[in-house]
Length: 314
Image (cartoon, rainbow, N blue to C red; front, side, top):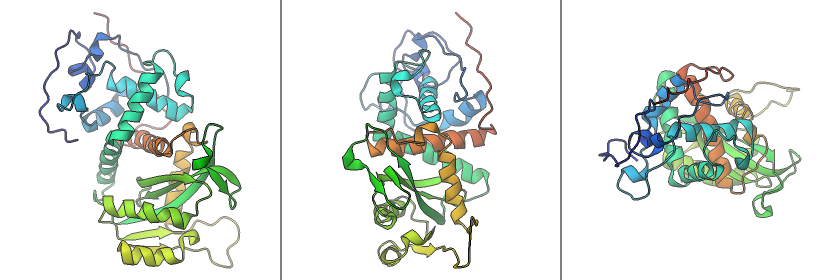
């Protein structure tokens, strides 16, 4: 999805708009009334300036067919962010956003075509560079988190976590040393961590060959250590609690992934699993991290909100 491709303008009767998204410039989004920001999840102008150059080019601008989009990319992203941040149903989107079916189709299309993953990875690379790190990570931390499932979750993709006493699903994440997500996998809560780690670590090795060391807790001990070393050329370092440890203790390296899991719980859509498809739950994790990284790059506090002024009428 390189942005270096030749973009051919699409004929449109669109009026001039202050928004510079591709749907406004080459699609039909400018034919609609511009929306004014009014929610805490809406992007500020500084966040949009960070995000805009990193947006992938849609297929209809690359000669892959499809109708030019009729809704502003910024508005569509704000609508998805509203769902992720506030945890509402898609059907309950406020009326100043596009129709909920269009927003859901937009989010589903970005998940299925890999555009969301592309945007997430570009933002993570920017954050790593800003923090003085190399774009390619060399170490990672793995852990899991069980969440309760809503009534719409199929039994075939949910289960019971006896250790945490939680019925639902389990999200397995691998993060870098800054706590930024490298890979995510959603399974039934009944799946053991070391069983889910096999495809998760394989995905990590496929996407980030520079990673050589992965820290994990005692749940990943055993045959997984040998599998990672022999099949994936990864060193799985088990960080254990000492026998004389009592109460809460911050363990080396493991606190990084625990912090990331707490970041995810700040997005209400991720407090409970409402996604029928596990792949959409994985996408919600990426959307949540995209919001966090965009705000970090723009220097915006999570709770800060600066409304965008509506465009002057023409």
